[in-house]
Every structure is written in structure tokens, then in C-alpha cells.
Length: 337
Image (cartoon, rainbow, N blue to C red; front, side, top):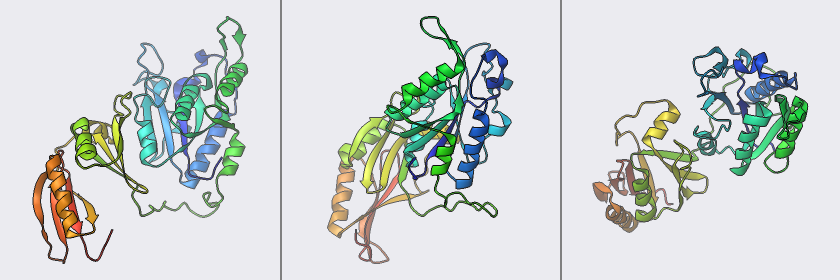
């Protein structure tokens, strides 16, 4: 495992998985190994994702509101740990998980949980197809016995082995708990002393603007302002449609529907307030300020304040995009781009 920060994804560690009706299972040490990984991730301050299955099938122990849908107490999310609720085996389908990883710059994921032949395998396949550097932990996953397509009964160990064989080398690397924990840099594992708050490094890698009409917003920024983009991606997910623009090395602008942003954050949709923040576009001359302002206006922007000399010796103007986000185009003689 590479030493770059990775997200630990726990799949379906819910009370219903303890039901004897689920059948013969394998790997009785899986829970202990998941706890070991969870403790290592928390000690390192690395991101953790808890996936919970919310069934839509009548009578399922995983129906919302049933005891079986609750997390097992030892795997309950801690404050600040992300929770994903899914309705199908794949944790990426209609959950926003892909975007959650991408906006945080997380390219590596370590997947554990249950069951290997269902939710774990389907999630790992998608992670691999999305380009994630993916690890599935063999002794921190488990599955159940079942018959194969020919009707031959297969033990849980046999089912586990085949699922891991399906994944290894094509969608993911298969590693043990000891190998994964051993690959976490020692500097990340604070071996002694009280836990310290994780410092937030100064820097921004993504600015996300909530928009009312995604296609209109993409036209404004791509065709109107000329920002480079691959267009709208994630349409296959219910709340996943988003567009990314490469602004400069290490910084992206994302356009995401307000309703999707509200759902992902858990906040209600509110009216936009253009004076909450502004985005600054620094240019090399007064003439360039005028040229950018003219292009924005031609693209459909509303000129809020025409460009002019500022009290601090610069030259700047303001415009709003179609969703009322406020931009300042500015020439600062003390801060050349």
C-alpha cells in the first residue's frame, strides 16, 4: 500500500449481519481485524466512511427503523466520520460517494466489511473502474455459504476465495490487515500521548458552487468564459451530476445543483446570498480587467459594478454569474499573477 492518505470504507457492519438466518459464514476474526484497522485510521487521522444498507424489500432486517439496520455498536461512526446510505449492493450507486472522495482528493480506498460476494465485491469493482487505487482486506471481510450456478453447495470460504480472485489484480489489490496497518507511515500513527486535533493545512483544492440549472451554468463558464471542462459527469447517479473546471494547478471549480449539495451536506436549500463571498480573478493589467468584464457580460453575466480605480491603488469590477455568484476581476499592482 502506498503511503498517501487513503479512505477506509466499512461496508454494512450492521446488526442484521449477526442474524443466524444469514447462514454459514467464514472468517470469524473479521470483526476484530476491522476494529484494528478502524483504530489505526482514527489514530492516523485518516478519512473513514461507514456504509449502511437501507433495504427497500419488505421483511428485510435492513429496513430503515428496524434494529437490524443499525450499526453494530463497535462500528458506530465517530464524530466527523462520513456515513453513506445505500439501497443496492454497490456503495457508489446514488450515494454521492464518488464525489465525496474526489472533492477531497482521495484516490486510494481500503474496503472492509460484508459480504465479500455481494456489497464488498460490487463496491470494489466500481472503485476500480472509477480509477481508484483500491485495496480489499481479505481477513477483514467475510461472506456466506451459497450454491453456485450449477447448484453445487459452496462453503463460505470457497465463496470468499472466488470473490477475492475476481477482484485481485483487475479491480483491486488484496492485502491482509497486518500488511495494510504496516504500510501506514509511522509518523501518522501517534504512538503515545493524548490525541491531538488534526491541523487543517492551509490550502483549497476545490471550490464548489451550488447552481439552479447545471446545464445553463456549464454553458456560461465553458462557452461564455472559456473555462476548460470535460462537461457534466455523474449523470448516472441520482444526485451525482456535476461539472469540474481546471482553474490552475491544484485547484478545481465544481458546479453542482443546489439540491444535490443540500442533500449531501444535510442542510436545507436556501435562497442564494451574493454577498456571502466573492471569487477573485487576478489579472495583469487594467486593460485585461476590462476585457474579462466585457466577455462575462457578453456571456450573460450581470455587471454589478463597472471596472474602475480602487481606493487601495488597484483597478477592479464585479459581475454575477447566472446563479448570482459574485466575481471580482481585479488588477493589483502589488500582486501580479
